[in-house]
Image (cartoon, rainbow, N blue to C red; front, side, top):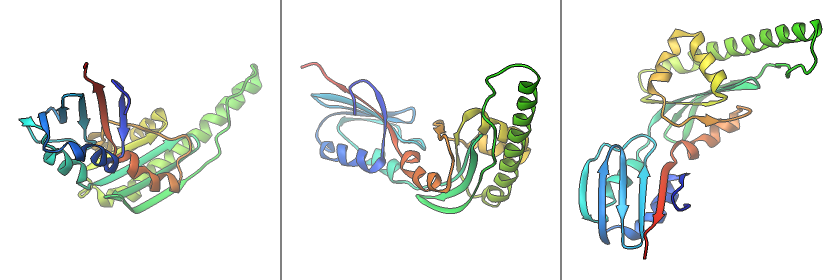
Length: 213
């Protein structure tokens, strides 16, 4: 944790860092989906990734509501898309219970001008459309059966590509409606990317400031 800077920290590490403070003298306030902890030496603000409904103020360090929120598992629909490929999956807690990935070749950008550049651009656009169409069809096939259970969605990859996939298929609108605020940049979505995602997905936003002595 860096003074004054927001960092995303794995939930187990957050608990390990804060547990020694629980019950100590200080002040704790819960509001607007975050917990603010004040001790004699530091101030720490923690925002769990899936929200924190508890509201209250305490004249000591009271971490039970925060730890409860951090420990909760959720069913999350995942869509990662870039022009290098896509990965679609469902995470039940930290377990990947459904997934499908795909790749399609999309040419890089042409550095020269003229008619050849125009042909190159049209071909690149065709390849990109084919990839995004395939990603949208796959997302519907994999995620629609989980629509009733998945309370949240996680979007990642390249933001423009992910938005383009959602725009292609109305049956994916619910992903945008349930998406967590954090976008997960991934240059090359793959199966191992989905398997590694839970650490980042469940990481809390933490800001720490040292108090003046």
